[in-house]
Length: 405
Image: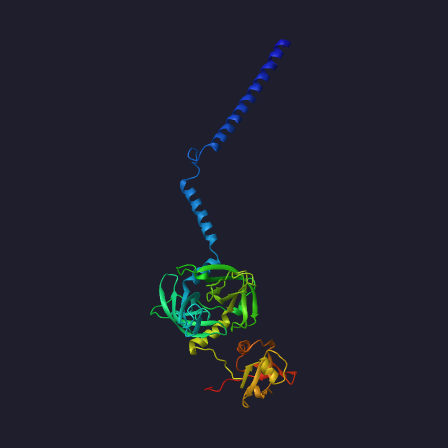
C-alpha cells in the first residue's frame, strides 16, 4: 500500500469516529432539552400518565386527614367532654339600706333605700338532676336571684342548697325537670406538679353567650396555704397552684386534668399588688376537699365537724390579754371547758391560749376553724398552749359527737 493510500485510510477512520461522537452528543443534548421542557411545563401540559387522578386524590386526602388528626390531643378531648357541663352564673343580691345619710346640699338626712346589684361567675354541673358547684363569693346565701346559663343556650333559675364561707364553696340546684350533662371529680391526691391543667369558665363575664373560655397551663405547685386577710374571713388551705390563666368571672369554674376530671375549683388569683389581672399565679380548691364540703352541704346545707372539742373559745384581743396579764399574741383564749370533753381530758383549762394547732400558727378564729376541719373523729390533734407566760404542748384525742349534739 502506498503512502497516499494509507493516509487516506487513516483520515476516513478519524472522520467516522468524529461523526459518531457528534451524533451521541446531539442525542444527549436533545434528551436534556426534552427533560427541561417537561419540568418547566405547567401541570396541565405534563404527561402524568404514570400517576392516575385517583392516586393523586388519595394522597391529598391522606395528608389532610393526618393534619386534622394531629390537631386533636388529650387536651382538646378533655375540653370537648367537660365544656357542656360548665355554666355561667348571674347572681342578683340586695344591699340592705335603711341607713341615715346626711346631705350637705339639702341640709337634711335621707334614708338610703335597698339597692340591687348583679355579679357574674362560673360553675359546673356535678349531677344529672342539676346540682351546681361554685364559689361562695359567687353565690352566697344572700343571693336574691340566681340564673344559670348553659353553653347550649338555655337558661334556668337556681336555688342555694348550702354555702360554706370558710372554704368559699356553694352548692346550687337548677330549677328544671330535665337531665343535664355533668362532670365528675377526680382525685386531687394524685395530682402531679408539672402535669397539664385546664381552666374553664367565663372570664370577666365578657360574652353574652355561655360558651366557656379555655386556658391551658400546668400544675405549678401543691399544698399552698394562704393566711387569712383581716378584711376577708375566708381561709385557703392546701390549694393547687396553676399558671393556667384565671381571671374574674372564672371563679367557681373547674380546673381539670388531661383526662377531663375535675381536680380543683378555680377560686382566686394572686397579683402581688402589680395589677388586677392574671400574672401567672392562680389557685384552686383541691377536688378532694371540695367533695367533702359538697357532700355535707347536700345533706344538711352546712358544714359541721364530726367531733366536739368540749370547750368554748374567743379570739385574743389586746384588751383581753391585758386583763389576764398575758403577752399580746394571736390565738384562741379558752373561756370554758366541759369536764366530760376531750379538751379537759388533754389538760386544757380556762385561761389557756391556743397558739398552734397541728404545728400551724393560729392567725385568727376563722383560721383556727379551718385548721380544726383538717381533723376527723378518732384522730389525735396536737396543740400548743400559752399558760402563765409559758408554752406547753398537749394532744387532744378526738371522738365522735354524741347524737343530738
